Every structure is written in C-alpha cells, then in structure tokens.
Amino acid sequence: MRYIESTGEVWLVGAGPGDPGLLTEAGREALERADVIVHDRLGSEAILEKFAHVAAQLIDAGKLPGDRRDLQDDINAVLYQEAAEGRFVVRLKGGDPFVFGRGFEEYEYLVSRGVRTRIVPGVTSALAASVGGLAPATVRGNARSFAVVTGHQKDDGIAATPRADTLFYLMAMGRLERVAEQLQSDGWSEHTPAALVTDASTYRQRAVHSTLGGIAAEVRREGLKPPGVLIVGDSAGAADSLPFPTHQPTVVLTEQGTPTRERFSAISPSVSLLPRPLWTVEQLSLASEPGLAQRLAEALRLPWIAFEDGEGVAGFVDLLLQSGLDLRSLRGRIAAAGDAAADGLRAVGIVPDLFVSDAGELANRLRSDGAALATATDAADSGLLHLPTYRRNHRQPRPVDWAFTEYVSLQREAAVARFVAAYPAAPLDRLTAVVGDDSTARAAAKAGFRAVITNLNSHSTEPAKLADLAV
Image (cartoon, rainbow, N blue to C red; front, top):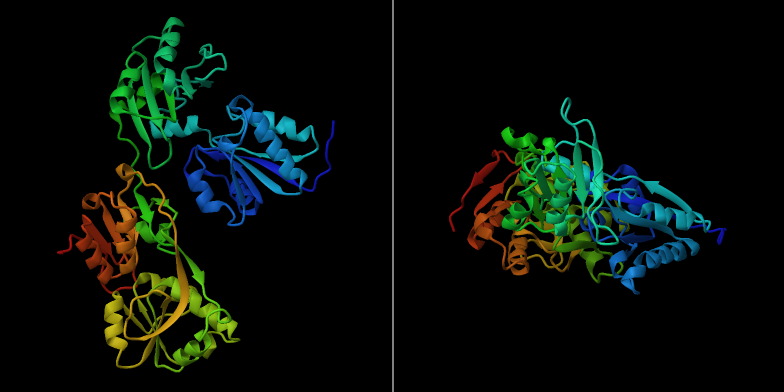
C-alpha cells in the first residue's frame, strides 16, 4: 500500500546516551537541516540546544495529545503528516532507534505509506553505561558474550533471562528487586557482581557497584534516579581494583560566543559544556539603528578602535560591510581588552596593536588619545566613543545540576551580576569562575566564587593563574 509520493522525508536518528559529542556526524547533519524535529525526553535537550537549526519546529513526542496507550500511533501520524507536506523530518530517539526504541515500528509504518525514510544508528545507553561504570561488556577469557534486555514488559512481567555472560537491563530501575529475584531463580548467584549506572555519558552520571543480591538496597541508599542501566556479570566487578576514568569537568557558559572547548584546555583536555547561554547576540543594522552610520564614520576618524569581546569585532566588521567598506578602511590602531576580543580580531586577520587584560585599563590608556569602543548597546560608559555593534537578548536560565558543575564562564563584568541574579541558589563558594579580564575577576571574587581563573590562553604576557582573590 502506498499512500503518498511525497517530496518530504523522515530520518530516524539515534541521539546516543546524552553526551552531544557521541552523536554521529550523520545525525548532526540531519539536525542542522531539519524542518521538523520530533524528539524524546531522554538524551535530547543538550543535543537540540547545540545542533538543531534555529528555525526548526521542535515537537516533544511525550507531549502529543491523545490516550497514552496510543502515543505511538500519534507519533506515527505526526511523522507521516509532516513528511506528506514536503518537510524534512528528524525523529530523534534516545540511544539507538533499533534498541528498544520502537524505531522499526516507525520505519515500517512510514515506508509502507511511501515516505522516504533513513535510519541513523546511535550509541546505545547500554554500552555508554558499560564505560561509565567501568563494567566492560566483554573481557577476554572471562566474559565472551553480552545481552541487552528490557526491564519493562507490556504485561508488567520480567523478560526471560538470556544466555550470556554479561547482562544489561534497560528501564529496570523501578523493579530491581524483581529482576534480581528472577536471575537468582534462573541460577545466578546472589554474589554475582552488579552495577547500576544512571545518566550514562552526561555530566550527571553516577554509578554504584554491589552484588546481585545487594544492588537494589545500594541504589536506594545512594538515592539514584532514572534513567539507569543495570549491569550483571563478573565483568561488572572489573573495576574493583582500578581507578575510574578521569572525571570530565562541567562548565556553564553564560554568554553566546564565550570560550569554546579549546579555550578550556588549561583546565582539562576534555570538558563538558552546557551550551544554553543567559543571553544571545543580535548584530545591529545601519538601516534600523538611527545615527549608527554617523557614529561609525566618526569612529573611523579616531586614532584608536577598541574591542572588549569577540561579538563587538564581528558586529563591527558587519557594519563596515553594510557601509560598502572593509578592513582596508581602518586607518587607526586596534586595541583589545581580554582574550575573547583578541581571538575575535585574529579570526578576521588582525593582530591588535595593544592588548591588555582589563577593559577598565584599556579605557584609561586610550581616553586621552581618542578612541571608539565597539561593544554592546547596553555596555557601561567607558569614557570612549560608544560604537554599539550588537544587542544582547536575555534568555530564561536553563536548569543546572550544581552537584556536577565545577566551572562558570564569565567573560565580562556584566555577566557576573546576570549569573548571580539568574541562579540565586548556585553554590558560589565551591564554583570556580573562568573570567575574561581582571575587572571581571574582581567582580566574581566579590560575588563569592570560591576561586577565579584568568588569562586562559597566550594573548597575555602573564601566565595562566588560579587564585583566590581578595574581596
């Protein structure tokens, strides 16, 4: 049966276990192109924040109308209808679409109705939990096979125990005792090593190790919450005498355009970035901002043009292009305050004539010479000619699990007050602020951050420093 000959198509994409870095290249390209994304709750928030096209329509599959028993029918209908109207649809599913993801049901439904459909595999949460709990699926000479089992059955029963050396139970946290009882009745010893890993691969990941007979009580004692994977078998005890993999530091980014993963290499070669900023940046237009063209012309006549952030650089270059000019029209010298501004200038092929680490120091040094400061519309008065090149659009703060957060990126002084107002419950006394200049460092220390890191890269003549700053 063929219902449509549509110009649209559907890709069933495995989101992986939650870490955006574990999304496949094909999955990322699909999200960047998608007109519509129908997503699950698990393992998708950070991925959508990072990769979804800004104009894509996001549909939460868990919030579709109708009887919960018919939810899959509702999802199928949405996928079909969107594709029938010619849209490129991504069905983003946690883990892998074909591992307890009902991906085959959706594929069968769509192709039988003439919808072009592609499947993009993902990293299943079982294997991510294997790494997170240091409980390998196989160990040479000890565990030669593994099985992935659902802990949730339609009839509320427990799946029959498969024949394998290592077992991975998904969706079993609500029935750990029953799973353990079933395994023991099937011949597994109560002393068999067992592990439970929650939120595998994400900054919230936690793991506990025990035995088959004691894992349920240990999970209750530790207060672990779903989603989690139960691992049973001798390999689940492989980590008893080994150190766990190095913890991946988590950084909250407060602003769009703040330092990327490479900028944090002084902290760790691998960090987890929470990408949703407290504000985004909108570049200004000469046509829509009264008087901006005249102010740009005045700035170009001054001896200095200064920048305190990368967004100011990008906005300035854009204003030049709108005026029919380019960087060859610059006659004055260029100054940068902080690493973010220097990075922005280097990205367009300019090495600043003057670099200082503090925006206040920059203003003091240039005020008598005559300078324009290309920055945000709401920037504080510096005593220099204010050349607004972008506008900050404030956003609602995203929830943050402070138990697994270590660093906060604050690249300018205004970000400190904004962060404190947005997150009044943040435990500042155990967080480290990563700041862009000395004035921001002083503001962060005064706000109560435990420690402050400045000068993360080599634009400054001073080495990177980690210090508790006096209030």
